[in-house]
Amino acid sequence: PAWSSRSSVAQDFDVVVIGGGPAGYIAAIRSAQVGLKTACIDEAKAADGKPALGGTCTNVGCIPSKALLQSSEHFEQAGHHFAEHGVKVKGLELDLAQMLKRKEKVVKGSNDGVMYLFKKNKITFFHGRGSFGKSPTEIQVGNETLNAKNVIIATGSNARPLPGAEFDEKLILSNDGALAMGEVPKKLGLIGAGIIGLEMGSVWRRLGAEVTLLEALPGFLGLADETIAKEAQKIFTKQGLKMEFGVKISKVSPSKKSVTVQYAASDGSSKTLEVDKLIVSIGRVPNTTGLNAEAVGIKLDRGFISVDGECRTGVPGVWAIGDDVGGPMLAHKGEEEGVAVAERIAGQHAHVDFNTIPSVIYTSPEIAWVGKTEQQLKAEGVAYRAGQFPFSANARARALGDTNGLVKFLADAKTDQILGVHIIGPF
Ligand code: FAD
Ligand code: NAI
Image (cartoon, rainbow, N blue to C red):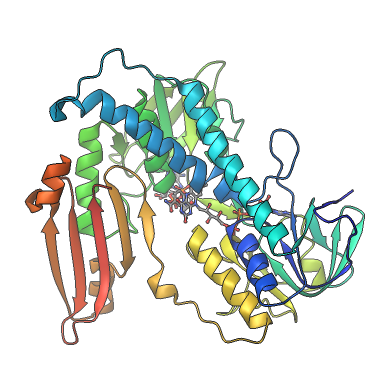
């Protein structure tokens, strides 16, 4: 049976949100704030079987990855950088179990925080799997039927598996397993040198693993500005991340204690990489199976829910937001859509400017950008001016002892309107 945060379960709602990740829980909170009677359904469970509100971001994404990035950076600093500041460390040791325990505590605090906000805003919570019933405004969860004037789908995404290398979370890991390794692997392989590849690769390299990233594309970090990507590649290579580009994976064979990856290198030669663990981080796929969405007339496109520029599915009263509608798979993008949809339901005018969604890669140095890259402006034929400044010439960075990186601005040649800002630097 569905679990509800209220003793008596109401059946009729102005808004029912399916999915309690950043897109869904923010949509639910904003709906309640603008006076709509709101329910949210989420199926995620903590280890004790209790609700684990907050979605991928809170449970196996943004929050735990940032916790481990912070802890592993402390270890790296203490081991390699404190001495130059005159701070001597003797007997430095890694307590991985404590590091993972702290990460779990940070996650639990965030799970509880969302539940607290639901109670505070009088949102009815159902713990279970939601799906469409006989009509687009009838939602089933466990034995309950909820009648909704509006439904917001926010079911998020899952790691994309590599055909022939299914996740077992023991040897072949998605982000779930990558955030929970009980010991540091001697050799760690990552397929995909995207954002997860760089963040998780950095965590485990700092903790002592020999890390190799295998990337299909010929170049590094295609989404970032080329100047930043070039600088980042130089710095990460110096840190010890091994990266190969233009590879084609031909076979992944797990044995008892290791995984062998066979691949064609960019020059066409056949190569083999043997690792203790393999993380597959080749993007994410929308999580829309089992929703029964198509049966009630909702259109899907390669698993993504089709929506217009305002998150309407085309079926009256049904909206979709977050990772399962495409666009950048970022928590704050889903949150903005959630706020806007709640306000639209309440009859207000809301706008999300998709040109100003920032991206951050929480490595060291950190990479952040917003707006257009120089290569995009060139391709679009926009007349622009570029300016950049290195942290090596910045006294604050020199005082920090971290002078890697630069800040780059791109502006319209005529109007000076800022078109893009790109940073790689200390945090
Ligand atoms: P999700 O967070 O995936 O939430 C969907 C929820 O719906 C889940 O709880 C799921 O259990 C539930 N659900 C699904 N189907 C049903 C159903 N039928 N019934 C009931 N419940 C259901 N983004 C950032 O902006 N910054 C970061 O630093 C960052 N780091 C990341 C690190 C990693 C390792 C990963 C994997 C992702 C990271 N992301 C980050 C991306 C971010 O996690 C996602 O963009 C974000 O979680 C998407 O939010 P969402 O609400 O759309 O979906
Ligand atoms: P990604 O899209 O960032 O990177 C995937 C990489 O894998 C790409 O470079 C791609 O070319 C490569 N690839 C794809 N197929 C391949 C193959 N068969 N062999 C080798 N390489 C292959 O996706 P990633 O890293 O899995 O992360 C998923 C999403 O999660 C990100 O796109 C991002 O939206 C979100 N995320 C955000 C973070 C942040 O905001 N700091 C942190 C981590 C994840």
